[in-house]
Image (tube, rainbow, N blue to C red; front, top):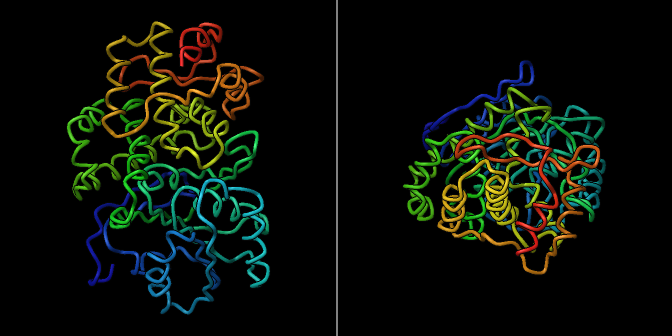
Length: 368
């Protein structure tokens, strides 16, 4: 790493045999092209960002790569979950085709989860697959969506219904980008962070309980620990189950409820992390209804998420029939059976397809 940038805090490897890749976690290295260039196998590269992130960081990344003899272009997309569509993917294809980009080209996703998901899907499908690199700039994307190879777009009938498992060549998470992140988006990212503690790491959950105020105040050391621990948790699970045939499904804790909220309310009205936050509260309460989790523990989950500044109640206008119908269309549903991620205790989750839907409807959804 060049001497004029900040120290690299950590490199974590997602172990997938010949498709393994590093996650570089540090501060102030977006202009260090020497970290990115080794993962660009051809000479053509396209940096894809959005209207919010590009004015902040596109110049840094472009200048960092300027001395490597690349045919480097960029594309700036509109910002927002409502643009996570097949039409936007077509815009990316058009840009690459007009520039005569070949199968040896590389896409670089510079932005949050929406940009990363779309660029990954475009990479997976352009000329049947080209390389891509993730440079996540939001907390949610740094701790979750940039790692693990889930890519795709939304459909009016369901969240992330069109996509592919497609791993990046590397991930570069620069924590300094969080300094420009709006408070609402920082809080939304915390939902996925809390998730890791709830499903698989009680010690981390307890640390979060004692450090939420530091995280919300953007304490650099606290944020660095959050990013590192979250990436280690996700990398470990993805290495065991890349395509969600088993244990990886627990990473969807709260998402069955959350995706239903996003779809019903209109993409972009609720941030993904906000919907997942409510979903996790509902999943904890469902775990209590199923006799797995104590009411005290379910209450603890709700209070912890509220302390993160996140919503804990679903929208009042979302009725129980709509909720159930949308959850039935979720990707995690199997042959018409809704699969839920439940907690048997704080720090331990499992997948269940045996939830009594009538009890769910009368005991949880209908009261909201």
